[in-house]
Image 1 (cartoon, rainbow, N blue to C red):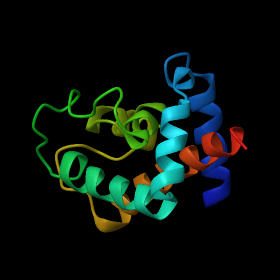
Image 2: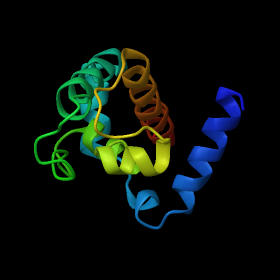
Image 3: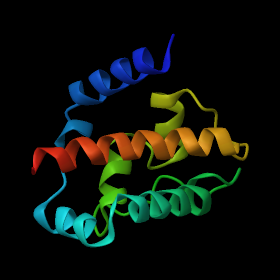
Amino acid sequence: MTKDEWYKQLFEGLGNSKFRSGFHLKQKDIDYINEKGLDTIRRHAEDFIAKRIAPAKVLNDGKQTPMRGHPVFIAQHATATCCRECIRKWHKIRPGRELSKIQQEYLVDVIMVWIKREFDRYK
């Protein structure tokens, strides 16, 4: 399966999930992105994934990602990159071992694809 095919399947599945499809950026999130820029938002996503998701044992797994307060947090819930169990279920990455740099980059890419799609809705 190609990356494009995987992303198409993934985002269709997320869109069909009542819970995941209920997340959207609000105007304050769009304003924040406009102020900081997408490159900075990507760096924030990289930092959040590295610190909150990537370790083999995650403190408070399942509760480590707030439901609001930053566009990346919203995107993590929308894309099931919010905790290791959601990542296992939706992205087929097993918990219990540290995420590789490639896995972290993949999760950040998924988050940023979602953020860009949401951002484009406001144009």
